[in-house]
Length: 564
Image 1 (spheres, rainbow, N blue to C red):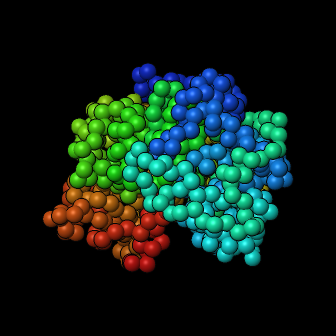
Image 2: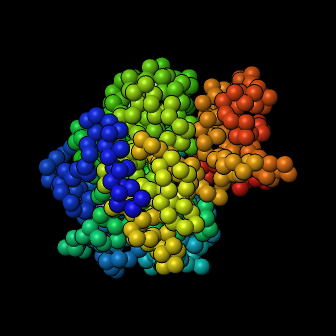
Image 3: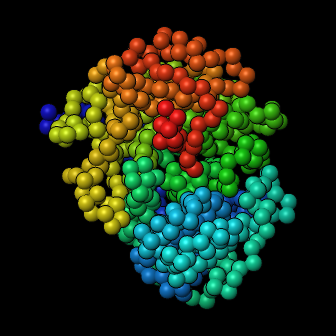
């Protein structure tokens, strides 16, 4: 079938499956202009309303606009030019928000670095991006000092989370705020005082949608991390396509974010969505169940996203009964080690009154909000569909499934390479033309991932191709087995990898963590699997105390391989 006919047919199927009342087009409250201009618009129309709350420290829209203007002026004073990279090496805090919009306003490029990075990782990213200026959390200065012999930006700015800690916090504070401010050496710039005293004129530069806004580095699962080049237009479209169908944010909404904002999902949730929608953001420096529960009640939070792991921790917390969660209107979730199940959904609904749903499928390369499941929860349709169900494409985004070798389109229901075309696609990997050309072909991102589009037009994500197993010639997808194992009521977490097998070629092996106090065993779980899945999918069971995790909550499967 020709591609156009295939896509038209798929679009008609997805239109039939579209949830009632879900917008079918991207929506732009302040028109198609960079989010830095959205910030200016909200500062004009609601200057005194809170834009950001951080443990009781509040910043209004007018203040966020003014401080980011002063930050842009400071960067210009330091010699930052349009297109220069500015690295931000920080946990969640108001200073990160001020810097983010200051960087965008002066036409520079935001280059976030994980605050969990070690010296070798920091040095690699600074060198790869050719960073000109680095802003860091002062507690991370030893890591910065360790790399200066290899690579040193022209200017290093530092700031402390304790600077904005209220004398009487509104909710329990993270330990990051308790560390005293570090005395800075003469070669360093104290960020907040420098912003306030900067005499440089506010830049007259106005970024355009096609200008580069950020270098978001991939996690390095297929080699060294690569910088995904994203524009202001990518950021705007991500908001305009995802917020209306999945988030439903309005200016009177209160959104809570604890996802790390160096991570693309956290960037969307904390830095972009609130400024796009004009809503109030309650920001946590990191995940803490007690702070989360207190913030929901104190700020009457209406919207939030959280890991299923985090939702489970709240549901099982000894103090959960002390807090009122009834302000919550919409809560999305992300399944990593723990999977969203009917049990978690029912218990969350009983606690909060709202339905826990899976957010989306996405990648750093696409700015990560490519599908949505909100509105597909009637009779638990999303959970009772095939495992690894990730819903429908957001408005303006298209998917297809192709043969890995020939690139030919495959019929609906086939398993093959998942390809995506979206207005938020990366514009290439930073300084990697060959890898960019291999991934981006005729406007499509060839993800290298296994996927399927069902006969109803729904997307299934089956995982990395290299993780697919062949058992007696049959394809077995670890992500599917993990999703199925996630339905077992006694299971806390699971991760599936493969091992060689003389008789079947490969054999799936599931490393599992049981809930505390569970009476289940490897034998009983194996029996459950035999009832739940085809015989060739039934994995060996290996019980472990915990799974090795990355900083962003993904399982380190290479470490599990060493246990085989």
